Length: 291
Length: 291
Image 1 (tube, rainbow over the protein chains, first blue to last red):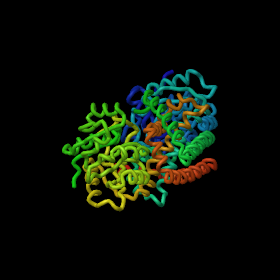
Image 2 (image 1 turned 180 degrees about the vertical axis):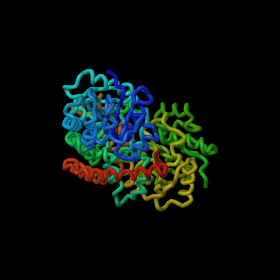
Image 3 (image 1 turned 30 degrees about the horizontal axis):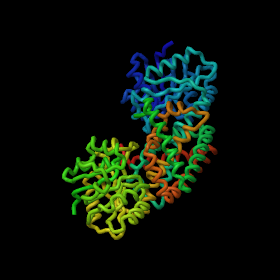
Image 4 (image 1 turned 90 degrees about the horizontal axis):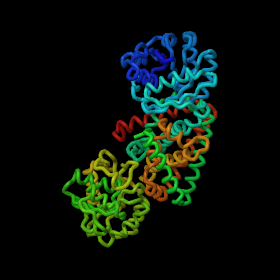
């Protein structure tokens, strides 16, 4: 079975990019979309994010083979409720949330008789909203599927094929493992960036104007990450609490060890770590995950 | 007095970029350079980083109006020793180190009768070595001068004019205040980035391959910073210990508060911080310190 029509609920950065990527790569797939914000629906019409912008979530879902919920993790339950009565037979419901166990539990409870395959395209920018999407967002990026045990290989294959056609590479993973991996590669980096930007803007000895002027020394890269959508990220931390707190504990231990090395003037320990971290960067470049 | 000849000691990213920027913006200024590494001297000749690559530091300094020490902060004393006997009358000695109080103390002790004006161009990339420099590195970036009280306005003016001619904007600041400001805007961001990349590469539950594959979720931006020159950064932390430990304490307090908000499920506290940090980003873009 190949996906022939897609309903996109939520037309922000991710939802809008999916619509544009379909138009670019799979012009035969029909696209319907909905956003709870009327202004976002107007912007979606103006930008042509989907072929049909609908005035209800149900209308965007009722003729779809695949319904993708592109809303903050904390709104998944509401979005599922809004489409439930309209979902056609044989539909696959998926999502793009950054944490997967809580989304799996929520959607399973809200849509007990529906095929649900949670997914997470590991791609994004610090921009948000219907103006932010672009067709190339998923090209060369990984999309992680976390299918429950009772989902058929056929349905997993159909969703995989859909994401591959947008340029993604597919990985199948257990939801809990996903949450641990992403806690390290995404959630903790965001938490740290938000924290240091907050710390810097609250100092008495250093003015905010100085922080901005001299940000080229490293700080500005953190501000980029810390400009990401507040609601999305609040929901990520509330919904991946255990893995985030676990990984935050490891990070804090390591930071404390480094703090001690600085206090003691242990240059060898610093140099050893600073050398080791370069190798990771090289691998990321080699594997095309940054330029 | 206008600078007419510059001796550059150390031909890595910063030293090489100064040479190239002079060639681009001030072709009448003569440039001499030296690097302790013979391979770097060969690379500097091949790339034309300076007009004359000398085989000793003294030879690069002996006919210069301005000698700029472009070596790691921990090597400033050695570099000063190497040029001392060759320095002509009326020369200005400066540097590009990322911490200023310790450099000021070191150079004052090594060059007691010489005009020394420590400086810090707040510009750089994660690259290092003689291949890394480029003429545009300083354009639109701030260069902070931390002149001691006994330096004349004429000499401060000459050095300011030199950096302006390379495209920099000038700020005059007390060395201690510089060290506090840069601890926040540069040193702590680097320390945090090095730490999280180290933490991620040492996990047992998440493989290094997974960390690399899914780095597009935020982690990859930290790996870029954590690929910076290890020797340079070791020296920064050893030489700006007090300010770094002070600012690290503030950061850790704020991170602990956020950790508690996550544990308690306090979404409002998270959302409030995540919203506030966006404003800083906007200011950095508006002031041209990032794109």
